[in-house]
Amino acid sequence: MTSASRTRADRLIGLDLARFLALIGMMATHVWAFDLETGGHTPLTGVLSGKAAALFAVLAGIGIVLTSRRDLAAGSPTAARLNLFGRGFALFVLGLTLGLLPGGIYVIIAYYGVTFWLAIPALTWRPRTLLIVAGVWALVWPVCSQLIRTQITGVEMPEIGSASWFDLAGAGFARGLLLTGVYPALTWIVYVLVGMAVGRLLMEARANGRLRDFALLLAGIGLALAVAADRLAALLLGPGGGLNGIARAWTGGLEPDRTTIVAVEDAIAEGMYGTSPTESLWWLVARSPHSGTTLDLLFTTGIAGVVIGLCLLLGTVLTRGWSRALLPATGAGAAPLTVYSAHVVMAAVGALIASAGLGMTEDKIWLVSSPQLWVLHILGALLLGLLIALTRRRGPLEALVHASGRAIAQLARGRERTGANLRE
Image (cartoon, rainbow, N blue to C red; front, side, top):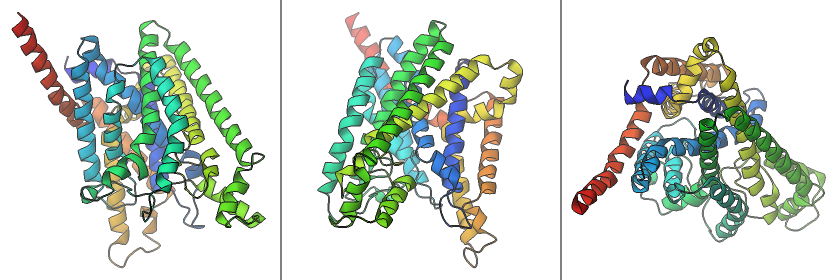
């Protein structure tokens, strides 16, 4: 049996299902974001915005644990750290390349690469430490981010959308990836740390034959966290005075009218682009999608826990027949980087076709945002997933990231062998 085959045999179907849901959720927010008749956001976008990407990030944290466990079990934390650095480097390069494509999608991959680098010191932390640090950071960092960004003048937020090679020489490139971009790594590290804690606890539960209990507990805790964050945001924005505080900032300190209050509510519901506005500290009590506030982080982390827990639970009860029927979905979930990248390329091709010739006409605008375009992307993901599952190999981009991590990790293993020989 090949290494890839062994890896596939050891996979948890529930995690692959969760990744597939994250993928098609992000696809919906990318290619069915706007209603062509009203020009506004679709109801589905309102439901999924911020949640699918957060789920993807938490699952990335779980993936870090799964890919580093062998080096750590072998007593080689340096190799595990270098492996993660190499994986992050491959993601960074891929993300900058995908960022060159048109299509209107804010590509998250380069930001993930940076987040992987930030997670390197946490590779050996215990679950409790990971959760404590993630919780404290979720409380402290949004305030720090807000205060730091108030001192940055003359820069439009987000400073970077899809990071690309064209941004590399820009003065705000590193700042955008870490602080002022669409997926600022210093904010998104919360999801990755939580995912790493979940991954460690998951592996322990699986080894002890308590996977189903763990899945139920994870879903329950996630639901409680999401409900608590949602209700606290509603309390602070309404009776707590948050809406009025933001509205006063908009009116220059004057008592806002109902129209201004409604405009603030619409802005909160529509979502942000990685960070909260800086004109009022009251923005920090909102849980607006992609705002990076404490309550946004807690709410979306809770939702991710619910989805992962339920998918893990479903994976424990699936019969062999159902597992085979779901093979296209689980195959896509087993190769999320390949599927996501193919989705970005498909969106770029659609945008180019839509704008070719005489420009964006009514008969071609569906290639930019429509339910049928979303279905096409889902079908493409399922086809890719089926092909990958049938070949019983890693996805091509997963293989590339794996090879990058392993190549750099060999540096540590080589030094360890040299040291052992010298000691002998």
